[in-house]
Length: 364
Figure 1 (cartoon, one colour):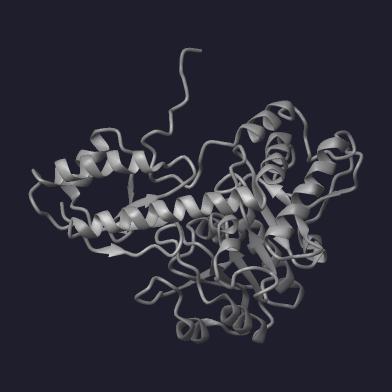
Figure 2: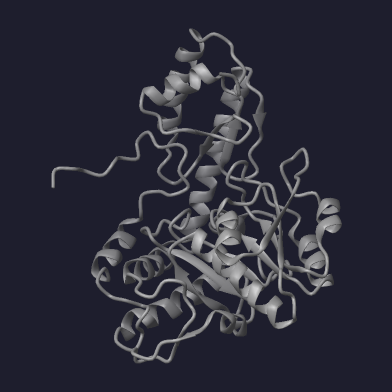
């Protein structure tokens, strides 16, 4: 095979990054193991227990349940599935899921797959969910309320304590999607984790800011009995039941997640957060210097209203950038994003903007 993987030197839009060297090595060593068959592969099964224990430590939960998933999409689907099954056991035949418009598109997939109604509520001027809108839409049919801890477009954290309280008033479960934010939020003053908010289930992905190799997502539950809602019998395996969505899973993600967390938690992640946040603030200031309207970063993610012509020119020159739903340029300051990389990007931005005709970011 002649193909080579793409480098990260111009990747500014991804929420994944280059794995840490110890994570890469662990992934290669455990590539052929299957944590979906723990009776046959006990070593990787023990590593998965270690992964969940460490994820619980990061997320403020002393006795966590859960498993290493393929990513945030799978974990979010499983959270909806837990809530649906719990609601059905209480006689709710057509359960609903209430989610802010900042929620990840994986919940739309979950609603389609699981035949639940997805109710989307608006966000406020700071791109955080409006609590009044949630209160208007939550009712006796609500199985799950979703909060976001590090939104994919603006890096915002919803008022999670209040959201959880609303969910529990109606006996609904409360799920926090911290797929991207979970490995940076411990070093901020946001209330987001199991110790600080009444969250029941959480998505948290080691293969994003955790610097594990893909695929390594995470589903955590406050009460391990919630996983019983997912269990199916596995008659031909050495174990009797399985709660994961996929059956066969590569042990690469499990081993990689453990290796990365053992190497980096907490000091390495703290230092990386400081670097990433400093880069985000530096870039926001450069955008402001160039008279762009900027959504100031609260986590290491920056958006600015760069013109369509300039955006297209930057893409054509190899910069891997993306836009928000509203059309702003979006840059995620992941661990592979260096200051020199951003300086080069800003140099190109200045050059292209100087020759671009001003056109609205959403224009044709």
